[in-house]
Length: 117
Length: 112
Image (cartoon, rainbow over all chains, first blue to last red; front, side, top):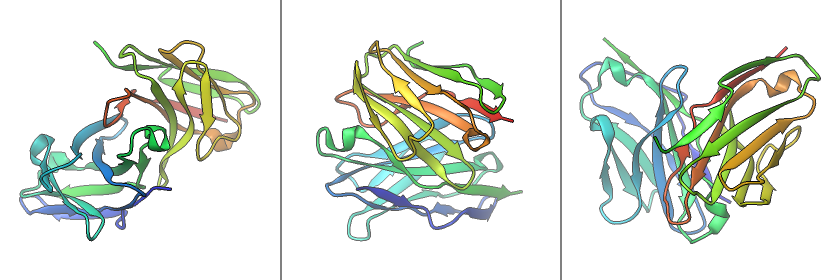
């Protein structure tokens, strides 16, 4: 079984400050990890993914995430938050093994990020 | 443009009515999924398919049926809608050598 925990329902940060959205995961094999963003009344947009290699992954809109295998974490970060970053963020995990879990992604419950002007 | 298309985008049903949500993808993906999104619950898997003619249950399958008669289409049916099925439904697909999903834009369903 695979699972994702996003321990914070909401994160508030002042514009211009760094932001972190936390994610921890559990999976039997090695993980593929993803971050998606959802703006109000919209679908899910892909931000970034970790497949293998460098533990620091860079994605869209200046976001990055750090994979930490020992802590089973994949926290999303941005050096300087913008008001337009306010949205709902989802972390997701999938087992790397070919065909494992029928390629299902398991999602966290989401973290609402509010950037305050 | 290549991608995943969901129809309809919005629907209001009365309790007990039936309906079918259509998901169509033009990327020749083998795997397709239906999720529901509810506040504070994230995305939960309803049913999925690993290929034409095959379907399987996900985390929350009760009250739903699915069919995948053609590789590009994955249908989600509600035989007798209940207010608890008020939700936003997302379809997603992935190819055999892919990593992450391609999502549809969602269907907002309200059951009154």
